[in-house]
Amino acid sequence: MARVKAKSKDKRLIIAKEMPPLRRTLPGEKYSYKNDEVFKWISQRPGLINYVFDKLAVNGYIFYDSKTGMWQGENYEDESE
Image (tube, rainbow, N blue to C red; front, side, top):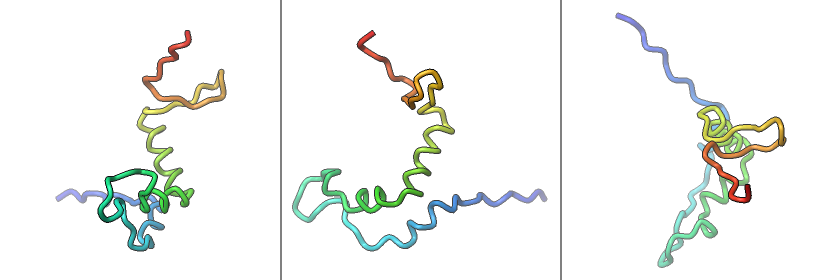
């Protein structure tokens, strides 16, 4: 029987195991990303942000344009042209 290789976990995600109890929505209020405690906590963890960025780049959602020195979305269309 063939062995299935265990899926390795990215070490940058380990910090998430230490996240304290946080709310996404404040009681009695509508959701707003501005008040999302989880997003705020994640945004203060560079490793988690870099993980998301790397996943977007590796999967082709964003790419680096060496001519302009900028990153952009795969489907971005400049309406000024």
